[in-house]
Structures are given as C-alpha cells and as structure tokens.
Length: 394
Image (cartoon, rainbow, N blue to C red; front, side, top):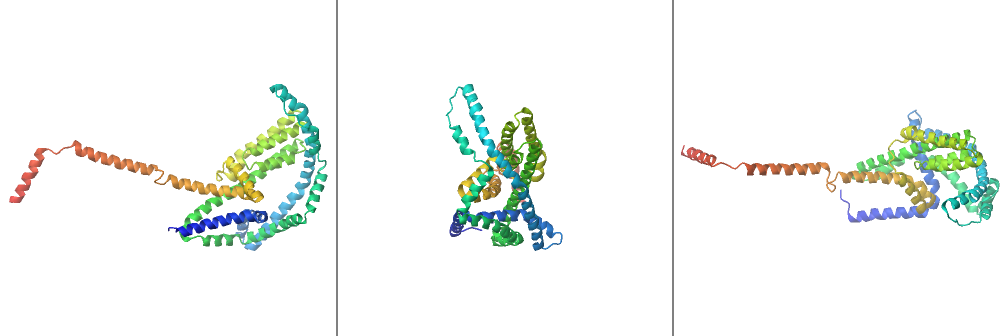
C-alpha cells in the first residue's frame, strides 16, 4: 500500500495540530492525564475481577473504592508526619548554614589556599528561617485565597480526577477496541505489534517501577526511623521517589540522611547505620525488587530518563512531566523496531546477504577456474568428429 503525497501532508498536518493543541490545552490537561494513568494501571485489576464472575461496572466500583480508600488512608497517615518533619527541616537549615560558614568554608580556604566569596550568611539564614511550618502554611493559604480562580481550579481538579478516572476505567476496553478499529487494515498487524511492545514497556514501568519505588521508600523510611533519625520518613520517601532514575535515589537519600544524622547525633555510629540502611536497600533492589517487578523490559537508560523528564517539564510544564516517561518508553520501542528493520535490510548488508554474495562469487570463481584449468585434448575432438561421421554414413 502506497501513501500518496496528499495523504502524507494530511498526516503531518494532523500531527502538528495535535502538538499545538497539547501545548495550548496543557494548563487543563493535568487531571485528565492523571486519570488516564490511573485507569491504565487499574485496568488489569478490573480484568482480574471480571474473571471472578463480576461485571465490568462492578469490578470498576470495587477497584475504585479500594484504591480511593488506600490513597485516603495513606494521605491521612503520612501528611501529618510529613508536615512535622518539614517543620524540623526548616529549623535545621539555619544550623546547616552556620556550620558551613564557621567550619566548612574556613577549612576549604586553609587547605586549598582559596579565598571564597563572602556571603551575608546572617541575612541568608534569616531569610531561610521561615519559622514554623504552620506559618508557611498560613502564608500559602493566604496567597491562594487572594485568587479565587486558583482555589476553584485546585478543588475542581480534585473532584474531576476521580470522576474521569471512574468513567475511563469502566469504558477502557471499549475505547481501546474503537481506537483499534480506526487503524487502516493494511497497517493493523504492524500497529498491533508495536502497541503490544509499548504496552509491555509501559506496564513494566508503571506497575513494576512504581512497586520498586514504593518498596524502596518503605525500606529507607523504616530503616532510618528505627535508628532514630527525626527526618527519616521525609528522606526515605524522597529517596524512594528519586529512585525512578537508577542510583539517583540512593545518592540523594544517603547524602541527605548523612547530613541529618550528623547534625542530630554527631557521631560515627549513626553515620555508619545510615550507610548500612542504603546498602541494604540497594542490595534488595538489585537482587530482588528490580528482577521481580521490572526485569529487563523497560530498556530506558538513566540518562534518557533524566533528559525525558527535564525536556517534558521545559516544553509542557507539569503535563510534560506526566507525559515524559510514557512518551520516552514508546519512542524507545519505535526506535528499537526501526533499528531491527535497518539491521535486516539490504542497506545495512546483513550477514545472510553477505554470505550469499560471497557464495555466488566463490561458485563463479570455481567454474571459471575449472574451465581454465581443464583444456579439451585434441584426441577427444578427433574421436568426437569420427563418431559423428560414422553415424551419418550409417
């Protein structure tokens, strides 16, 4: 099937229009994209419930209520503790600034013979010393209430996400079937193959990688809190979230935990305990969590993950961050398929083509060598002529 020039221009125009609409509508797309991701992650659960003789709607209701209750419970348990630890972190910042000013800067200047630029550390610490977290919350709420549209938009998103999520989850299979029916039949097999690979990659990432992030957040938080670190929960959650990029979570987490433990305890023992916690977490991630939940199906290089997140945020803001990794995974599938097609094409010159060409060349050389190296004897020519004359006489 050949695509005409007019059809090619039509496809390019539709693609450009889609990108333009995405950029124009990005401020209102966040709840819809969040609902799509939740529906995509919840669809396997609903499919499993359907095998237990539940209807699609009943399975959606059960899944919706269970996940909503889980998110609500986690929020009620974590938010108060996180607010308290953020308050402690705010109080720790002036101590950190004082330590850097009185100890770190003089040590660097003496050891390396440098004269670092002098900052107004007192003014900086006063600016960073916001006071209690409650004051920060009051200022934030005051700024929000100055714009009624911001408050209405925030509340509207909170209400809109579960509504869109419910309807998408209920009609997910029908939507996928209708999208498949729009694909030209000539390209249906190829499109289905690519869609299956994208689904495997996205499923491995969203379900597998999120499970790894959650498990690491629990391991780090529990380990740090058991050793008595005041900021253990906050640092553990941040390290778990940052583990979306391999090793980044461990680097960020162990750095923050060592600083917090140094200012809270001031001894070597707790610094060693922090290191042990993150060594155990990384060991479990490499030997148990990643092989079990993710495997080798994602194929996204850490540099590609960082670039995708930064590029998405730069181009489309928060919506771009939501779309960055799914888009990168799909692009990786398409690029991998193009690479395979290129390796099997005549343009690349695969091994089979080269071997076939070499074989033909060798056969032709052998035939030529045989003809050249075995000249016909004159006696054979004379015998053939006499035999022909004898047959004609008879």
